[in-house]
Every structure is written in C-alpha cells, then in structure tokens.
Length: 222
Ligand SMILES: [Zn+2]
Image: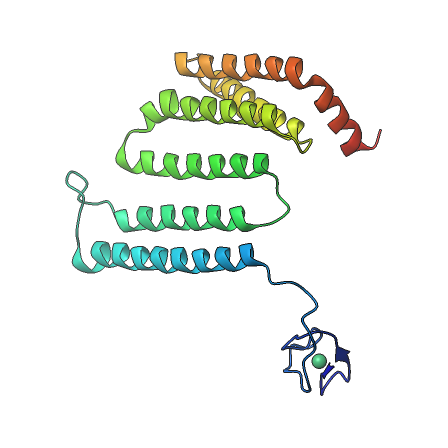
C-alpha cells in the first residue's frame, strides 16, 4: 500500500499522487484498481496535437498581420489577424465542448451552431456582406441545423428526442419572428426556414410523439 507522508492516509492500487493533497506517495504499489482507458488516451493525444497546430496558426496569423503588415486586397484598414484569432478561439472552444462529458449531442450542435453564427456575423460586418448574411446565410444555416436535429431526433435511442425537437423549434421559430418584428418583412429564405422548422416539428411529433411524451415524464418526474 502507498502512503501519503503528509495526510497519513494509505491508497489502494498504483496511484502516484495523493488524491487529497497531490503530493508524491511513498511505498510499494499494488495492482492497479482501475483499467486503462484507451479512448481517453487517444483523445488526449489528438487534443494536444490540434492545440499545438491552433497555437501555431494563431501566432503566424497575428505575426503576418501586425508585424509583417500583410493586408487583404481591398481592405487596407482591416486587421484580419484579429478575425483569424477569433475563429481559432471559436474552433478551440468547439473542440473543448466536444470533449466535455455530460452534454448531449443536441446541446453540442446547438452551441456550435450559435458560436459559428456569431463569428460569421462579426466577419460579415468587417467584410461588408452583412445583408446577404442576414437574408440568406443565417436562415439557410438554421434550416440545415434544424434538419440535422430532426434526423438526430428520429434515430436517437437514448430518449433525447425532445432536446433535438426543442432546439430545432427554437432555432427556427424564434429568429424568424425576431427578423419579422424588426424589419416587418419576411425574406424568402427566412420564410422557408420557418416552414422547415414548423413542418419538421410536426413531423417529429407524429413520428416520435410517444418517445417525447415518455421523455417529458422522465425529465419532469410526472
Ligand atoms: Zn496527501
């Protein structure tokens, strides 16, 4: 049994550090208590490699922009390095979310979509394609996300249909209504997005109604 010289506790297995104070344990190790977890090891290697690549890209981008003074043709005043950094941080945040245990796929898709849209809007503002973005890109991206959520809701075997349904519904109906009340008009792509959202919502109630009802009972303990 290994012992912590500070906490005066013994630990089973082959732990190297004290679970209480993180000091180095002394004494003979026993057989490991827990099996090696291969998936986690692979994830950790992948995570470190992509982190190194992202840091490299970040430094190169900022360096080319601020130190070399490289400019995008047509945008002499734009510090594109900052946009570059913003997208890289967004990507890194997305990766971190993917590895975070305990959040369902619906939540991940929802967050990733939201972050991407926010970054896209900032970029569109800087490069001056905000009109196309508002009228076409955002509603198309939302409609695609809603369709993906619908498919996920249909194939879900873990009783999470409602999360997919709800995020699909919120992503379609809420932004369409906001656009309508701000501009008093409904561009074609937004109208399609709203129809896709309502149609697929009805479709999933028809196909997965029972699963959703059971999930409601389970989540709200009724
Ligand atoms: Zn200790």
